[in-house]
Image (tube, rainbow, N blue to C red; front, side, top):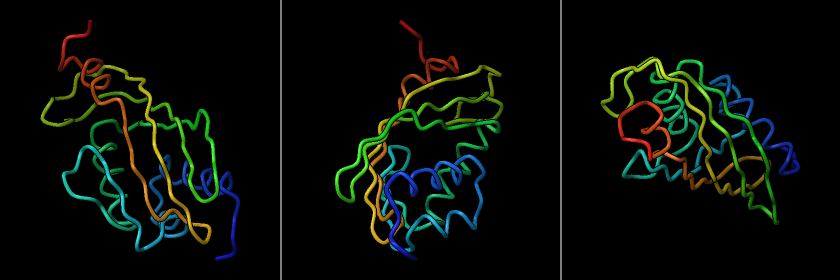
Amino acid sequence: MPSQSSESVMNRFVEFINTASQNLAREVISPDAVFHAPSHPEPLRGPDGYMEVIGMMRSAFPDVRWTLEEMVSEGDTVAARFTMRGTHDGEFFGIPASGNEISVQAMNFYYLADGRIIGERGQPDLLGVMQQIGAVPAP
């Protein structure tokens, strides 16, 4: 795959996470990629690992949408701030569907090589999600 700008890779990535397209996953995520997500104790790997996270989110929030609010890149590293919005229409970490709408931020670091993502460290606002679905009292 020819070298692509960080912005181009991230735009394709956002398209992937909002469509859950297997083809886009394989295009934008390296087979050797390693992802660290707070929802999983062990790192996830490759496009299939990322599809696991997307599947988990879509089962709880079928209409989930991510918006890339801002990004800063230096070399092959990208810092990105997302807003995640959706409706809690399925179980999430054992919490039954509430029907509540959520809107939370996530701050993630992405590592790129050869026009693909080779790693991610994600930090979504899980406390905000749990408060908005009624699992944890809001202040």
